[in-house]
Length: 338
Ligand code: ADP
Ligand code: MG
Image 1: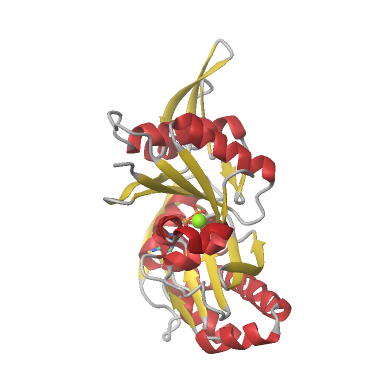
Image 2 (image 1 turned 180 degrees about the horizontal axis):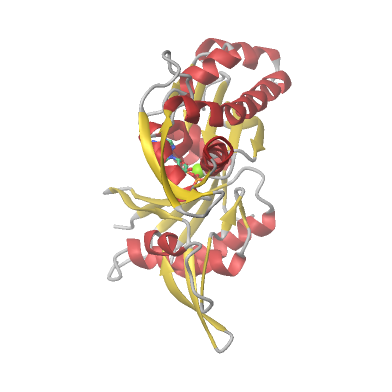
């Protein structure tokens, strides 16, 4: 039997889902090259390569080939996709798989073709492309084929994509350059400004997972955690206790920017669809939707109910798989020759 693979090629993480066994790969979208005699050779990919970011000697280069939802480095992206394929798929697979890939809304035809060719070169038999907001909505279980407006807010690493869907199509969408990576940076900047401490973004990402929240705690403090960094004045190692209140304060301006994007899209939405959205609410997907309280914060700001999808990080990959299985009913939303 031919296996069907769906791929979420995200800025921060790449996820492969197999129709038989579910998630078969979930790794950071990072690749590292060894440079010798002016030639680049693949050195590491995914989790291993992420650990190298910012720590490589001159002869090794680690990078994220996708940034802000677009391909920033074509060659690196191609190598990364190939390496993930080899890692995730059985080399002895009898028949080449059918592969559907989710592409950012607004990706150019050149970018789409590059993604398609990379996947073909890696060993796919047939390739289909699905646009990200559609995949996210399907994966979140929204009834996108119905004549009813639905809004999905996908909070990724580098961008948040907000879209309105109805009757199996994207009615309107917009992307803002705010995502989980910016949350980490905002936490780092907050700690530097308020505690004179330099803390790296990966420590801030850990802190976000531990005590991250979009809501100001009732007691003005909430839970706390300790971070290690370097004193901004004397350069010595120092520890600092950081509270939920600190994190909420650091993240608030970014949550407001997501709010602004939602409101401006609602403004552009035809009235009947907008009234559906007011009734049924916003659906939050993407890794960033895992931030505690982000549903409450956004529904307080917008006045529209907000729900976090089940397994928000995997919505796009599973939604792409669903698009594949819907066959004819989704055909209009699948691109084969960009
Ligand atoms: P992309 O689609 O851009 O690859 P993802 O949807 O994988 O991005 O989301 C990655 C972002 O989600 C990262 O910034 C990561 O820190 C963040 N993230 C993942 N899980 C959580 C969580 N439980 N709480 C807060 N942020 C999270
Ligand atoms: Mg994504």
